[in-house]
Amino acid sequence: MATVFFHPLDSHAQERPVTVSQTRVQATQVQTQTNTQPATTTPSSLNNRRRFYAPNPTKTIQPTQLPVVNLHAGEREPAVVSDTTENSFFPASFHDWLTQDTMTGNWAGRRTWLIDKGVTITGHYFQDSAGNPMGGKSKDVRYAHEIGINVDFNLKKLTGLQLGLFHFTVTSRAGKGLGETLPALDSPQEIYGSPTVRLTLLAWEMPWNRYVSTNVGEINAETDFETWSIYWGMNNYCQFQSNAICGMPQSIAYNSGYSYYPTAHPGAWVKFYPAGNNHYSIQFGVYSVDPSIANTHNGWKMNLHDAIGTFIPFQLVWHRGGKDDYSGPLQTNIKIGGYWDTSEVKNVYSHLGTFDIAARYLAVAPVANVRGRFGGWFQFDRMLERDSNDARRGTSFFASFTWGDPRTSVAPYFVDAGITRKGTFPDRPNDTVSFGMKMLWVNRKLTNWVRDIQATGATDIYKPSGEPAIELNYGWRPTPWLLIRPGAQYIWSTGGTNRYRNPLIVDFETGITF
Image (cartoon, rainbow, N blue to C red; front, side, top):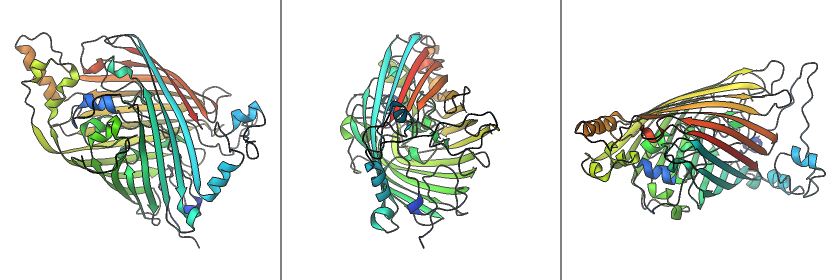
């Protein structure tokens, strides 16, 4: 009899444990932001984080394969997903191509053969375009994209031994970001990123039994701590183009040594499941703090040579729900966590340059070194309803609050929230409409320091306070492998001050699963 495991990769609670040979290996389809900038970064600099990486993945851009659902009288039966590429590299018809799971199909059966043997290969292309017809420092249009390849190895299938899973992901980025020209503290493009090819994941994951799972290798904290939940096979945070919302609450990335996608840092985590399922879990992690990994020439860095400390997160998770979002109890998740960061960095006054403050003022700022940073978070998400006459349709909601060390955090308080409706028009059960918001509060120490400078008669310095923003978009999914998502964003006090007119942003996303 096979050893029974509870597979931690599954986003939903499992009502019963599964074996490693039965587990669903999820493809890692992802995104972020960055730019070609100097070869060094200052750990505590929001400017450098914004230039090199504003974290964020869209782990899943499409709903998973729809289960069979019971439709009421008068409802149309959903189109049956066909795949005629089991025996051919090309689909039998244009309709078959549009209804197969991925754009490239099954490669004349080779893809299915590899999966049966324990090797799952997936890929994605994702682009973010954004322009501001009004507001901001200047009007501009920017484009950025990511191409990613992911390979998951089921070691049980490959070796016959219960050795868990091995993951490998590589990403390549190009393009420019609108956040630098607005300016904005959080980029309007979740995927704007360093124009380089980099290692994103190289890890061995082992579910030892129903109660303990581990992961070790080149990983990042974003995939496991203060991160998203999965609804209908989709990342609930990344139903938005704004990097303020997509991926995880952004403040933790520039307030600490939290490692984010698509960077990979030496690290490990352990998760305990006291009940033998993921209704409850206790999670701990340890990750190298190395800002130089974000540099474009360090995409394949896999050592501790420039590490400045260790990021140590912990998290408690409470989950309820059915085996999927189409049946059973409505999914609900509560996550409470915190972290300790051992690195030594400069205090919050080192962030003043983020707000376009003249060098003569920065020269007199009380910058000092601080060792050890800390913070915490609270996250809540829930499926608010599932349509009674069509289980494919429903509404989900999320909200989070993040707190950071006031000695070093440029944004010690950060809130984001969003709501997504899946199923829009009568014949569009997989399309979505999403509305989200974020509120970033700038550290009062910076606000008060600038106020004191203004009191001396200075008129060329602007007081930082915060940066609220909202986004509304429509996710059109004409095929299981294609996402087209137009939307709009509005930012108040862009760049964290009232220096520039509030920008209206028109955005457009496209995602393809290979």
